Image 1 (cartoon, helix red, strand yellow):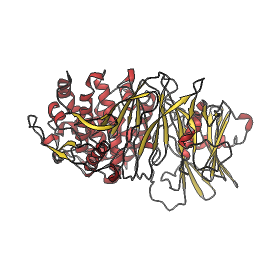
Image 2 (cartoon, helix red, strand yellow):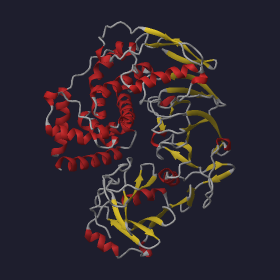
Image 3 (cartoon, each protein chain N blue to C red):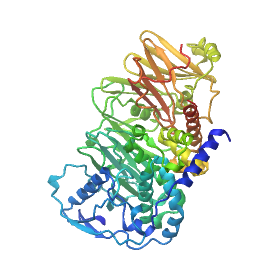
Image 4 (cartoon, rainbow over the protein chains, first blue to last red):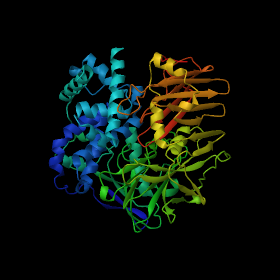
Length: 168
Length: 451
């Protein structure tokens, strides 16, 4: 439902989701798998990744006509949403295993994935966006709302930490 | 490419191939809006969304709270059945609520209830301004908030989709004022999954002086403390949010009441290079100036020759070799070589000094009995950014750990240790801000040279 403020009060003014934003559906089909995986890797949780990715894409569908660069918008929105999710997730305590099917589990990768999950969120996001998303520094900087130099710094610290973690 | 980077790419490639992507069609995405409760948090969110409508006293038609994942729903599934919910009166509301007010000069365009917690806030108000000079101030006051609350404000307008964002989420329990300058401003309210009794956000207009300096409305209850005077439990300082080299940097007034938030105070002071008028008094720091203020019973002082120095000085905290340390140790106190110094008073008996001598940078700690320093040649510089390695100093019986980072604070809970340590982190950001936190935590990484 769509709730709006009318004359100082709230009332239902319409059913959200009626009608498809032009062009959104085709774009959605193409980006959904990648959006889901990016979010899953950044949250270290497949269920959360699905939720976050759908949340973001749902909102984008509502604003579709105002979004000039949807791919960049999506990456930034996903990063923001995953960061917010991480703040509430108690990830470090739960030490969730990465979203792998049992048959795909490999001990070395598990250790590495868990080490990535223990990184501070921005470092983790840089790792995911760079090594899964294959984004450029400029693209990652836009997603994180920071300078490219900061991306380098975050990546450097992330790799340093990961090197120590996986050699212990 | 090194092995670790290869491993990361291989891992993600492998995992991505192994993952089963949930089947979600765009149409079903819209028909089953997110926030359908899959967890307790979402149930709370739905309840809070209903509470928003309570304010209007209207009956709300909501989607049934079936525990159905959109991924489980076939793409051609029928719409989820709807149910009509009667809502109680406002007097029954004790949960967080978002009360959008309409400041003078602004027009409230829209108020929406978000479906999902933990995302961009759960309720939003979008304003546009009738007066091009008007700016919007958001005052966020998370009373008794146990966890992070987000109140975000976005300047929209012609930069929609590439907005500036100010979030209070990083400042748990801190009252926070921000000023947004934009043709359209969207204020997104609190996260309802936070365990709070009362969270209110309200928007107020802020006026500008003739020369464009924002003037804080004293009715907000915040006051700036004069240097060296510390009777009040709260203070406000002007700051500018956003990168200095980008248009659209935001003015703001920071206010805090918590006694232990030195980090925010120092960050504020570090960027306090522009004036702000509070209660008729203009405050600012010119190069070489001093800002000092108090928090609770502790006085903090930051002497900044230039805000940019803080970045360079923060970089001094990178580790250096023993040889360099010993060579440079002899220069401690050689004032003739001193090219920059910033001093931060950490309580009444402890001072942190960040010093630069030519290309050499170091950090010193002084208490009433002794002084300890350590150095860095900067050889580990990473594109001009701090490395994030903590520097440890032993002063008296306490370990003091100084860490640099462009964003993230050191772990809030360090490894278990029996040392009676204290933790100090100095964090420099790209906005020339500096943040220092103190705590009673010990630090696990104490294997660096100490002298």
